[in-house]
Amino acid sequence: MRTKHLFINTMGCQMNVYDTGQIQNRLAPLGYLPTEELEKADMIIVNTCSIRDKAEQKAFSFLGRLAPLKQRNPDLIVGIGGCVAQQEGRRILKRMPFVDLVFGTHAIGRLPGIVQRIIEKRCRVVDVEISETISPDDYLLDGYPQTDTSAFVTIMRGCDNYCTYCVVPYVRGRESSRAPEEIVAEIEHLVSKGVREVTLLGQNVNSYGLKEGRGGFVRLLKAVNSLEGLARIRFTTSHPKDLSPELMACFQQLDKLCHHIHLPVQSGSDAVLKRMNRRYTRKAYLEKVEQLRALNSDLAITSDIIVGFPGETDEDFEETLSLIRQVEYDGLFAFIYSDRPNAPAVKFSDKLDDTIKKERLQQVLTTQEVFTLKKHNALVGAVQEILVDGLHRSNGDQEEIRDKTALNPEWSGRTSTNKIVHFARNDSTQSDNQMLTGKIVRIMIEKALPHCLLGRQVSSEEASDASGKGDRTHVA
Image (cartoon, rainbow, N blue to C red; front, side):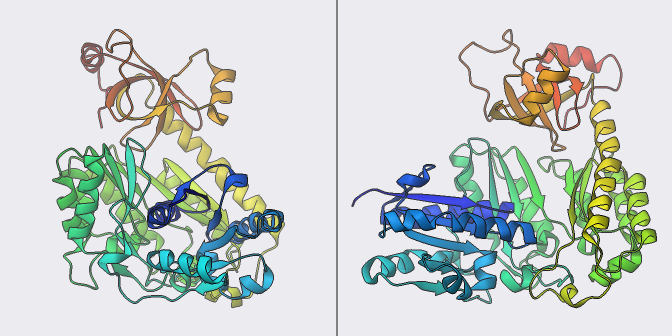
């Protein structure tokens, strides 16, 4: 079989990253191997996200640039998958006549047969059929092209919450959960290949397994926590209305569960939350934050904020800012509201001007920056346990480091609380050729920056000495 090259442009969320791994592994038996060189590709797939209008525009912009490649190489297969494909279906073929394949969020398992059909008949195919349930054949063990350290594992798909701004139930279908034994088997397989950390993915992991009577998310967490060789567990996303006392207690009870929860609030105004159909109040949300911190004082809490939702008044927006100040999040993802096809909020009146929305977004980001840096500064002088991702790559952080410090970090990793740490190794504690990727090491935090922490690797003795100097040492 001739080796062919597959280029995938992955856009959007962690679930899309996982789906890209599934696509690669489904097409490998047909001879397609991944490439990062667009010009060499025999097949190009854009794996799209439609959660926001900007992401959809980026997807079509990239697709448009592929037309000249198709003209030069008529045998090139051009495909679009993911949420935009599910949403637009056959309209994409009319809009872009050089596209051969449109496949939806539930069609990945059917891809090998679809691609064979395109090759043999030189036809164009659209497959956006949605399944009611998940079958064992829908996911392969090698679902995600993991690093040596971490991997994503999808535990469920779809959503039943129907927030009025959200398109997910319409492009990923109703909520359904994988069998727990299949999830555990996938994680065991990943651990056997060197993975130390897994992130369990679902649109609302808190409701995992409830429809199917599979024991719920807490039972799954405990099963994963018992696996030998696995060092850390993370999960996302967690809907506040379904965050149970039993799940909150896991942050105190399960030793492998990282001390971080992403708990999207979206707005601090009860009036906006009601229009969003979030089904909790500001008070209820804050009570759960208080309960979480009572159970685990080291817990990092991050969130999502949508600004400029239809009808959001100045008073509503101030409620959001006051909630941010009250919670003091470790970090925020903030977004400007945009209409999405099929979502009920498209029909809402009182849409806000773009200028107002942009101003409010900047206010949210400016407000949060104070608390992110405050959390980072609190760790200076502390020893943290870091799971090493690999060598430090030059990026925006590198420019910031060069401007503000003489430190020259070689490695990168994350704390249990999901804070990025760049550090220099301690050659007195490691042989010169020993690689650190995938290892958990102790790092003395020496510098706090807005987007990362800087430090140096320390020996066990140094960590113990730091612990004896007060309460600045934290191992999590």
